[in-house]
Length: 420
Image 1 (spheres, rainbow, N blue to C red):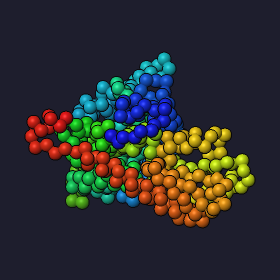
Image 2 (spheres, one colour):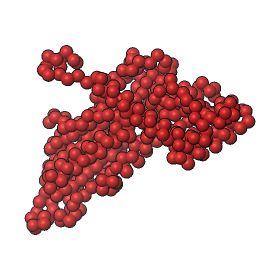
Image 3 (tube, helix red, strand yellow):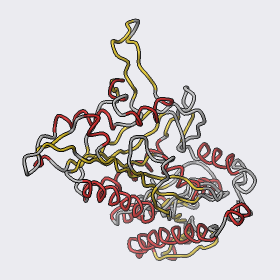
Image 4 (cartoon, rainbow, N blue to C red):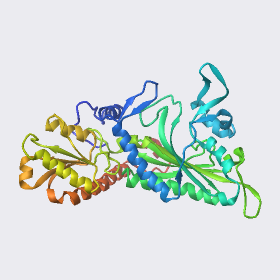
């Protein structure tokens, strides 16, 4: 874990208590609040903007690979869940059930969506008739409910937001290719957008998704040295198509079962961002998902021309595609510096009378607070996007160096025991 001498008073030192540090950060930076029901969380606007940026980046990748978004009901007949034996066994302990409407008992219990394989398969059984109907490539953005016993915001909650892809194919080879293709989409996204290096591979039989023939996952190392699962891609074979009777007429005129995949990731990625890049000052957000990429702090704002120049700079940066805000609140400059460092904004611009006189601004970068530079105001529309690109690259390299430094290669059980 990286050493850092200074930290915000209200945030526990991560080297002393990493769990407490994580809780302090998510509350102090106003990412979440606790919901009234145990295990639930309120995603506050700052965190939801991060999620929207994640959605936008993933949606672009899903559409590029031919997938369309759809939405399926969150209430699922209980009889659907029990059609696939392994699936019901895997999810039954976490399932939330609706049994009554008012005082009237329902004729059949309803499952509150823990995942959507069963209800989507019911639709696919109606939609698939011929080989011409294949493949079907659908993604869904939704909330799911799993009644977890031990919860932590973003990492494991009773309700969370996610995306789940569900695809149908003519052959096992096509489905297997899809499974690995989407795993690679996740890997590339994690590294190039979240600046988190990951390891990908096939999960053990014990760890595989309930109802899958094979599950592939990506694991990321957090700053406490622990691994976090950040996304999975699953090959179902014909397990669900047999349970839900999803058949198609082949080119040869035979009736055959389809082959399926599913793949998903969730708001857990926000937790990964916090634990992979944060420090004792708080968040450190990669520019590609940061709600605010550049914050402008007017210095001696009461003096003539300072606020006006800040607005000019903001407009120029917005035209250059930068997400930028000005902090005009009635707080001290030092308080604002600490606030935005804690919230992980990648770049801070300091604009004061002397800066304006010299035609420059002072620039601080969140990934290296020791480095302060001055940039000509006229150069900002090109210099700041370039700086954000450099910060994104540096954060990935830093995270990769940390991970690689904490990987040990063990050749036998004795070495493994000693290592852990």
